[in-house]
Image 1 (cartoon, rainbow, N blue to C red):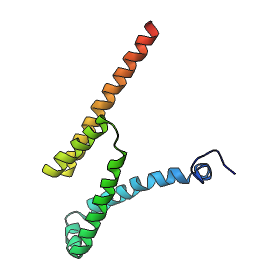
Image 2 (image 1 turned 180 degrees about the vertical axis):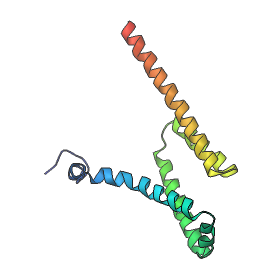
Image 3 (image 1 turned 90 degrees about the horizontal axis):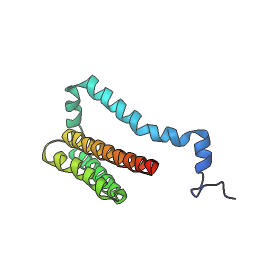
Image 4 (image 1 turned 180 degrees about the horizontal axis):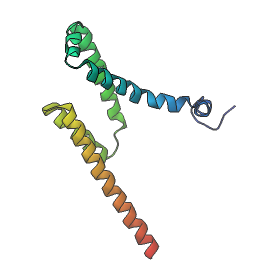
Length: 127
């Protein structure tokens, strides 16, 4: 029997709040890692030396494959522009610079899209 959703079990997950909790996990993990990095400071670099190089390389490969799979979801030109705005400075300089550039491009494109939608709506009202 269908529950009104094409994905099996989506409605019970929404009802119990598990989908929203799952969406917050990356934010919580990221925040915890930032706190650890700020608390440990330069001492964290000493911990990384203790990891075997093949383990770090494997983690890097897993992250690269995960990011490459995300490219399947990029559909339109505006989204590709954001991808390139992150990738080029991220490779050339630093990922933080790439993140800032991608965020800036995204915000500019979102603002332009909102202005265009507003003009279209105002044009419909005037007619």
